[in-house]
Length: 311
Length: 249
Figure 1 (cartoon, chains in turn cyan, blue):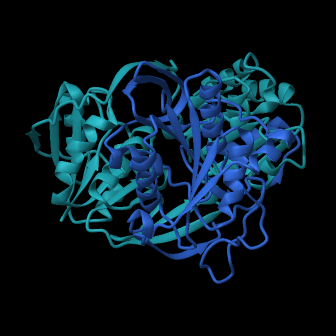
Figure 2 (cartoon, one colour):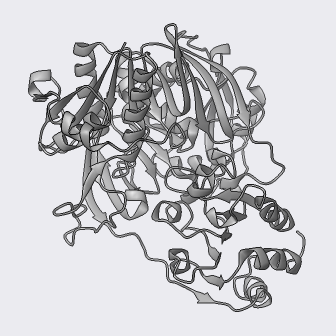
């Protein structure tokens, strides 16, 4: 049986993590289909069809799907699910909202944030903020799995796969989208950036994050933050890296003024190279850092910004 | 309007957990247990609704062993009115908890259910959404702000790109994110008062719910450890290492 990947998108292209989900899905079954539900999402469907390993794209057009209202998208996925062995989504805010609703409607369990596919019915997932790894096996006929994108390589470009149009299921009237307040940024998206510069409580104010922006811009990096910095109101919530925020695994992660609480480490410790800049030499962040500098970040960061070459 | 909140007993967030040597799970014997931090936010939100006159009664629900009564007592000390415990020593997974909650919701008929977005032990992030699905209710997940008025709720949600506003019909299930509020500490007089508040204890069988786990845990292991690296003295040395040793810039 084939595996269905449910793709989040912005109307024009599917999110980059769909390519990671396709890789995970291809380890679960012989054939991968991608569902692109939306309103005027034809371009997004085409982008899904261009992912290598995708055998077919299902395009579902319905005004009710325009903004990923889980109450309206779930019935569509539930309708399609019996044709598949697995339904796979990236564990982002769309997948986390939708997948459990689908699972409960199908009366099956969900495997959350799988980081490894051991067998089509067996998955490894982090628990306790990544301080333990559980290997779980599901006996359900339809397996609902969200995957952690950073643990699966993105599938290459290929195709194009055929796009089949299917009907929508309409709006249930339970919930409606009002609007969004999205952070505007020219920088790379945090979860797919090759380099991430992150700041913590040590920055002492939102104003001081400008210093990190200068470094991030020079490196072509995404900008992140610890929970402490977000809670203190220095930066918006979508900057948060950690167990309950975003999980990142860039080639280079620079932690500045971040002590390294367990829940923060859970969101970045799979990074290839970690740099820590902190005035406290006992800070736990140094236990995971490849390179550490103990000192005043207000001195070190501008010096580092001046020393690196512009990308 | 009645508000039902769910509170889970978990290993305290300050405790460094240890994986059992036989790889069957995580050591919980003689470990400090507390209310899941996201559930504290749920309890706090319900209390604020009651203080504003939006909620008439707050019911604190928990499921698990007898000691979950302590977790419910904490919610009662914060300001919840009474508790319901579905008592069992069996392993409970999110779908089973959602089914138990549905049975209690059917009985109590709350206008709103507020739960934490995830528990810090299994990190599943499922129960609230599953409960909403089983009830056929709307869901306001990862709530950053909640406004309830006239049979509907406006929910500001924490999403990948920032914040999203939705309007949902009541009754509904809300799951809390970190910035929704800052939970209060229970005062000593309120802790004393909470001892007299009622807790109803039910059995899963009595609710007609099959709680058998659907996921089999084959093993639990320590994650691979990252080795601490080196401390460098100067920025020049750091840049040199990143360029020539790690090759990342």
